[in-house]
Length: 541
Image (cartoon, rainbow, N blue to C red; front, side, top):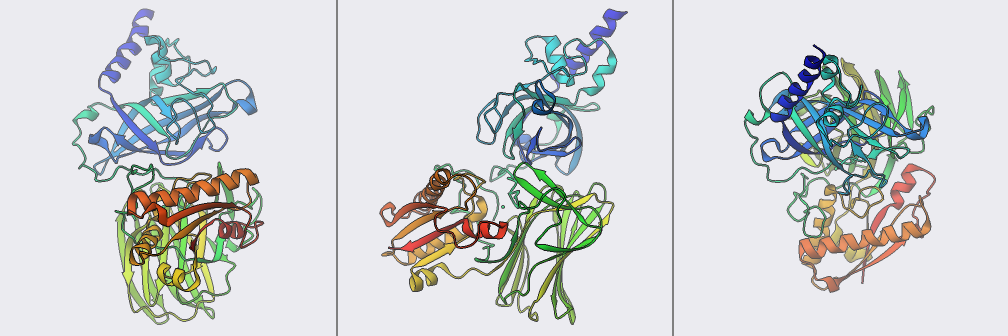
């Protein structure tokens, strides 16, 4: 009888493995033993096979154990339980087969710490050397390889990553290969394939940002950077920052110093280097702004958990205590709905519903320029109105409501005066300062949302064949002077590389310099000041 109980799990797992499909996916959010909490959502976008490309795999953190806090090995346990495929939700079971960090390095985390797939609860490694250890890894622990009852089979969806290091940390963009099967019968291989995607999915970096952290998605070019020449030039971030907060100067029990808060209050959540101001109940946030110019931009990187309900985030603009404009966002797990209206006198400008994963962090942007008002989601235009007249704005407010949803979080909020034309500025002043060329954190890898500014620079060079430019990279003062100088040089070189390789600019027309933090244009003591100092300047030669 005991032998029969021992054999049944083996037969069950063999059946699961026989019907399994290997899914390669990119993580859409950062996870780690020092940044995540049990129950946190984990999402990944499928890269291959082509049948599932673009699908989203979702789960939660099932267990965390940090070696630095408890001694011994670190353990990070996922529970990937759903696959969103072709408009349907498919229940799945999975096992991690391989892992690589966001830089493509296999079997190590972001800090280069060696990790293993599959473990028992005691923290000892099981690499799948035999059927018993494979079963232990598949079950995610309990008794490791020594499975002796059918009760253990119920945990098949758990998948462990372990390390003897103090912590395990993976950024968005890290890659996993999951051995995946349908939970409840049937075969994943029998599902109808997705339509071929023109662009491979880009990783979602917490900005992120955060924020966003990000028109359209971009394939990597021959220079290792996203393809900027073919992306649509849509939203261009405003140049002169009027308000900025990424909440990095906020402590766990602090109030947000750059907002006036009314209502239920807020809490700070940290995901590695990303800080998120989280709203759990009806609350109003008023950024410390005294006015907005006629032409301005608004950006926010938003993350939320609508669960089975809906959450609302509303930008309200005021003039002398009267409401002038409202942009309402209705967010569910299946869509974002945008609705814009003028308030005095009332005029409904229009609305649009975008089918998207409402739990994925996304960058919202609004651009008001010469009576034209546009709204963007991750760089793609959603609303576009002209001849919009608004009274002078002297106050902005973010309002929130919950209809079954869990939270709304901001990872970045920015208001800025609209960006001037590159060609006109470089011709008249000889220097063009831009905050619209964006990089991954502590990296020279350009973000896809840099495309509009890069395209405008390329057009300016094309229209003026005699123009030569010095590209200067500037950083804030966070980190050592040596590191910042090297980072700024590499970022300037990256901009040159893209202009030469993707826009066919002659290399002799461009030179580069790394300035580091030696020429700040604002204080380095606040998030807004540091954001101002992180910039690229182009100087006429």
